[in-house]
Length: 196
Image (cartoon, rainbow, N blue to C red; front, side, top):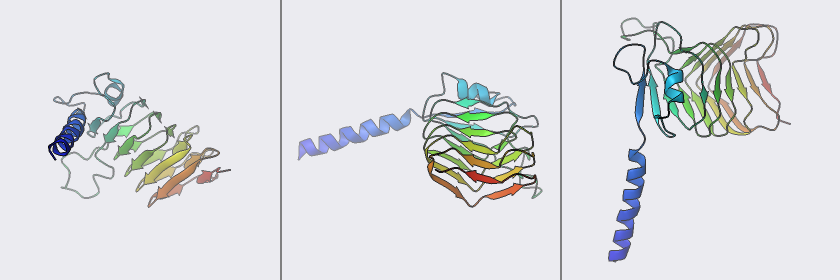
């Protein structure tokens, strides 16, 4: 009886200790945040796999980045000025250049992408983001990953005349594109899933 109780306590403490290591970091160009740039936060050696990065909106866009460790990145959302008086800051967290996800288990919420979002890792979730792409060489989302990609509740628009809004590479499985607004304003296809 005692050994069973002792074992349960040890397992609980190990799990609790592991979860205590995950940290929450802040990004804002204003004073008081841990980082002033999103690319600096993502690339920092202090930010470890499993950490969360909270990104505030800003008048200027953030620069793109590459994610190479499992992170949760949460922005303020988009269309924040639609209901006046409800937001202290109506700026979204806009990303003005390419973002690449190379780490499994990454989650991104509430960011506003102005360039292509490349997903090169399995088990990635993109939720409540805005993809507003207009450059000729950009797609909204391009998935090189093979398994378990979720794109949910996003607002995706593409006005360039060559690439699609959402594309998936050959052999991809378990791609969930759920409850999104997808609008293509040019003459090519909006959604291309090459799942052969």
